[in-house]
Length: 310
Image 1 (cartoon, helix red, strand yellow):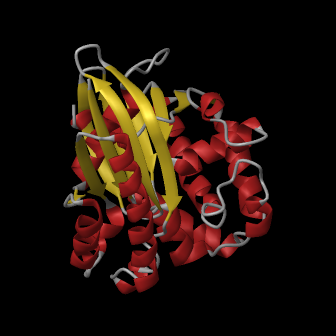
Image 2 (tube, helix red, strand yellow):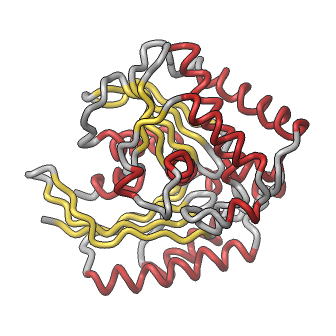
């Protein structure tokens, strides 16, 4: 049994998982699973660099989580950074700041490695699902599409579209206008066109959606009275439900979205654009593969990072 600490720092959130991994038994037991919305990718799409206030938020969250790691006695630590950090010209400021606070140098992982870790986390222990699987990891700055089966990854592609990036670029944080929606869809469709030159969608039997946009969208579809991971994990959705929920969220103001009982306050301003991306992925997949099952998983890249330490 090994106690590990996995950090996933994306464009929108910084997440920590401390888990006891038993590699021989193939089990992982959560000790701590926590998240802070730090919006590290604030403005990166426009400026190419991290904003000082975004760095301050990330550093403060890291200091808080570092104390938790010390308290829980994690033996191995891995901190990975993804889309926003790959794009930022001043990323060394971020990397050095995290290392100073945590004692571990962050790894800026490639889109391919991000995809592989997401696939492992999302599909390990998946039951009641038919392969091939397409894992869709919808983040703040990028969205990974990963195709594979129980033997592992067959193909993957990282698209430079995410809920924060497209919100800043096109839709804004309130209701999405028809003009903004059209502009965002043009970017999404172009990204999917390119992705399909790398990842074939035609044989997919199960779509596995992961990360905060998808899990929150699922909570909205289920009309939960709060964020309930045990209800969200493994939920089966219908394509029509995804489309209806995406439309509802787009028509709400940020304030109305923030008032939903399952909405993290740091997600309310970008969830509508994220839902639009996921709806388009579902629609594209239906066009190519008929009617694959649509599952939501609470397990994702964070779990893959934890397993990589075992």
